[in-house]
Image 1: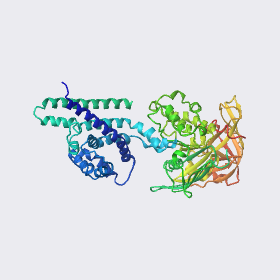
Image 2: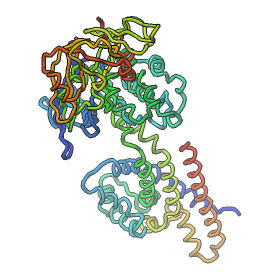
Image 3: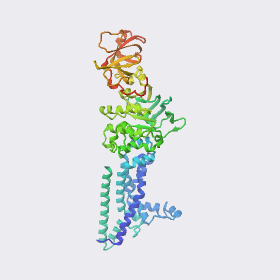
Image 4: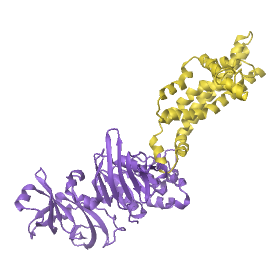
Length: 225
Length: 374
């Protein structure tokens, strides 16, 4: 069972999109989880809701909103284009953005759960020992939430690999640029005689997802020791 | 040590409906915050540590102003140089004992460090635990590591908030000697929060009594413990006077030790301490009786002459009487006896103390060896 170059391309693109999405959203996710757990401010519940939105609205809605905001004539996208001639619409970066936004709630939820279990009293203790707030975070808080970060990152990675609706709405289905595994599978199913390709793509997807899950389980067990 | 107080606090603070008002100065050595739970002891310690900010007032440690509302000074907790030993040990679970101990060290430059890992592991006997994780330690071990961690941050003051509260009495008696060593060997002021009068008498030089959010009295332990007006707070049943004594002789035949205090001598069951050894002991008021003449044929071993200073007027059948026997002593007698003996301030009396009644547990053994020269 050999993969065609188009299928290889889809696999490579999927991994690239997912890794970039996680790489960029991980620091943001940690910061967001910290803000949601440790800070009280007006609008916190609203912010919490917005973060979780991609989990509950149809992915197409997220894709459409991304298009409205980040598209070349979008609210932010137009400014980006006019000032820097940068646009993420219809590019693999756009696919990464769509995947990142969709996976963000999963990332934040895992980290947040772990962060809620960290006793602020430990942070207080570090503080009385002479550590500045940032040092407290790096030396006490961060090491204690590593399991949550790992689980969150792997869950989010799997979610990125599976992203379909937001991606196709925001960046379309361009071979070699935005046609990730699910989009390639969709294309194969739509075209006559594509059953063989579809089966191979399904097997790749299942293998990747299972691999991610098993890795997550293994890492969590190791770090909890 | 300098002549300025080791710790000076004059603050007002409000959390919700709870008002805290504290004003006292503490001499070098160990200062105990004593009071019922809910009296504001922990809040006060948190304010000194900078974990909460008072509404008004001033906090000084030695010559350093940590907080002054009028001058807008509020040193952040990480720069206050306070070593805080919390009620729960709060050890970092992801670090080894060594990692925990040295955590605070890295934030002090070498020139201002005055404690070293070896000294502290010796002092607290935690050398064998260095490579272990806090989760595998016993309660007493964890608390000792927590004390070591605070010390190694080279603090200007050590704050201990009921460090023994979570331990059973066997563990407590294991840790108490370590705290005495800290007090005698380390030489930085220590604040020790407790609601156990035994611990306070054994450990403290200065005592600050808190009630309902206010500091109601502060001063040397002996003075505070002999104040009859503070009885309701220092505890009626366990009321007693605190003596500074010195081992003056051993009687091998009868298994007794002779102790000298400024007004005379006392005999107690044999103590295994050298001649001249100084310590502090508490004599409970309920173990002291009074007589107008020296009883010649009684079983009382300790009879000391003194003068009535103060008679506490109380509603119950018994009352506490402060007697000056060269040092303040408190006797608990019935009001009927007070009337029958016509006791009033100035009356010459003999205080009868049962040797066996001297509370050995409350004696600050080794406590005052180094700092009180006389």
